[in-house]
Image 1 (cartoon, rainbow, N blue to C red):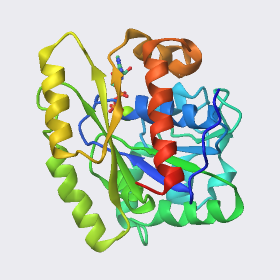
Image 2 (image 1 turned 60 degrees about the vertical axis):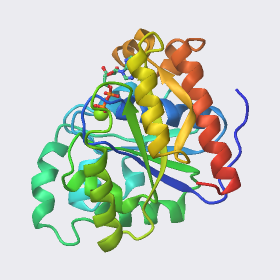
Image 3 (image 1 turned 180 degrees about the vertical axis):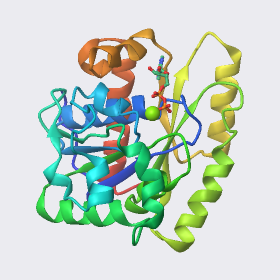
Amino acid sequence: HIPLPRPQAPRTIVIANQKGGVGKTTTAVNLAAALALGGLDVLVIDLDPQGNASTALGVDHHEGVGGTYEVLIEGHRVDQHVVASPEAPRLHVLPATIDLAAAEIELVSVSSRENRLKHALVEYRAMHDVDYIVLDCPPSLGLLTVNALVAAQEILIPIQCEYYALEGVSQLMRTIQIVKGSLNDTLRLSTILLTMFDARTRLAGQVADEVRSHFARETLRTVIPRSVRVSEAPSYGQTVLSYQPGSAGAVAYLSAARDIAARGAEGAY
Ligand code: ADP
Ligand code: MG
């Protein structure tokens, strides 16, 4: 793998879109693995009780395994529960178990409930070298997602190239403005990635054009194609990068990671 440049400063990127099934988790795990294969230190935080990111990165997340729940609710340190992913040497994961489903409610009554993850990651970064922290969110705008939006500096929105692609993005933009104005003034939409692009349909091209006209600067040149290899990989506990390294999906995620790393090295994001 081609070495990727380090960012000027460590980047914490939340992959957000409250619509389910748009490719958040797929993007989180494949980008994280691609960045790590480029020689960068990467930490993935799984904030979805379904634990799909943990699964795809080949880490154990059965009930009772320590992870994001213990960090958010019990105040454990992130490094107490971080595990290495077999997908790449410098790739680590804070797993999510189904226990995390309760955290959405339990967080309501804990102190500084929106800042729990932020504080945990500040502590982690002070003790560990990390170039990229990638946060995978559940499909809602609840307190788990708010914790991610407060802990991150940047948002990456995956947009599925289908009908109603931009539906929900304006709601997400309003949420970003609220979080920015109250809890995290550094938060910015830095990146949009077009996913599940089907070059055979006119619609996909139209959606891509529409997104680029709204978000010219943010939208990555690289587009992720719809590919059955991408959707098969998690059932083997793998990313598409290790499952089918030469496939169009793998090549696209490697290219997207290069785009993101190049922006990071220039400080242009
Ligand atoms: P989210 O995390 O936003 O809910 P996922 O990443 O889980 O979305 O993706 C939803 C479904 O679409 C999953 O079954 C996933 O495997 C599949 N998928 C994601 N990206 C692609 C792609 N590029 N090509 C084909 N299937 C994809
Ligand atoms: Mg997901």
